[in-house]
Figure 1: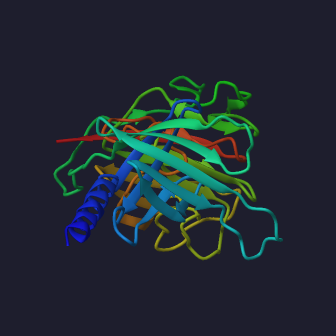
Figure 2: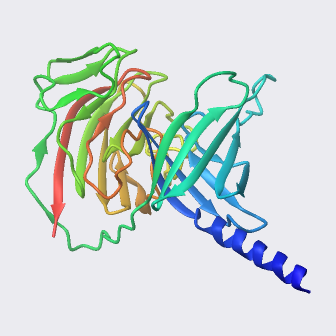
Length: 315
């Protein structure tokens, strides 16, 4: 009986220790100036689960396995295999972490990479943000974040990439491959109006607070999905696809209060106060409780901007 009781105590202790890893975590990767996000549930039970941004393809990836042994969390993510893609070798990403002072101190490596040094990362619990878009927010003075003349107020997100953004006849345009742009000013709650234009097969996006991407994509007439125009990228699909054909000017009117996000695409509301769970792959910082910059994605393909107006929202 004592032996059985002892085993039960050990099992309960292991489950309790594992449960400390549960929740949402914002992850900083100092080596690459990147930000990741993970949500863990049921750790310390027989059926743990989780999701991660982003191991593969900029998506929110499903975690394959989760274990805790001797106080160390280990989770793995198998590379997704597309049904329409030819067979090829896949990889497995492996993440390990320990709780140190309430934070996750971890490493990342890809199986089979030989002598490559593990990437170190740090995770903090994602903050609870209680602000709601409840009609009590007052509009401040609109700010023309793009002045129509030059790149004042913007800088390269990746200073090592070629800087091939220019302004001509009041239009900001890129020439990929180049860097994303990031605003020098930071914002918390706001309204944003953007007028943009793309060409065929364009793929761009607007990063909010430097963390959450609203997708810009040439997908005229296609069914709405979580990677399509107007989507909270890889998370929430628009209710309808309101895209215009490439070559026409389009608009986004975006409102972000706390974690509540509304997007109006070409005059049609496509996201209505949806909850932003956490970071998307565009994130360059993980400080979810702090104001952040805007990002204009330019490393993928062509995009033009002729208006970028931010109206802060305050109480």
